[in-house]
Structure formats: C-alpha cells, structure tokens
Image (cartoon, rainbow, N blue to C red; front, side):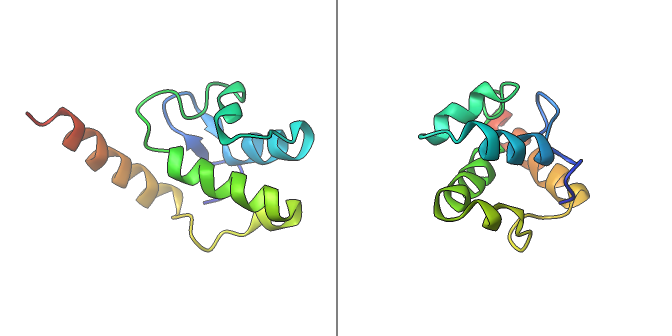
Length: 90
C-alpha cells in the first residue's frame, strides 16, 4: 500500500494522513485514530491495519513506514469487498 492509497475506504483517509496523525498527534490509544478523518468508524475493515500502524508508532515512529504486512491497494480493496459481503450475508 502506497502512502496516498486510502487506508480507510469508507471515509477516504489515506495511509499518509494516518501516519502524519500518528507522528504529530501521538495518540495514546488506537481509538483516537478515529479523530483522523473518522478512520476506523465505518465498516471496520481498516481497524486491524490501523492497529498495526498504531503499534508500530508506539514502538518507534520510524517503523510506521514499513509496508511488509499491508497489501497493495487493489488487493486491499478486493479483500474489503469480500469482508463487506460476508457482513451482509444472512
């Protein structure tokens, strides 16, 4: 996932915006990331990814930029679509 790709697809919050929020605001709890454009408050798909970035920022702010466990934008969006479909299945 690139910096300008949406991390929160519901509210179009980019990875760059989340990383800058973590660096500048230095939230104490992962739930405070909701103050970053509403990230994580929609369908919930991005919450595990937000948590990863938050945990990295707590360990070392320079570690936030690692990309190893974040999928590329296309795969990320496809996985979210499947997640949303499972949520809507009776």
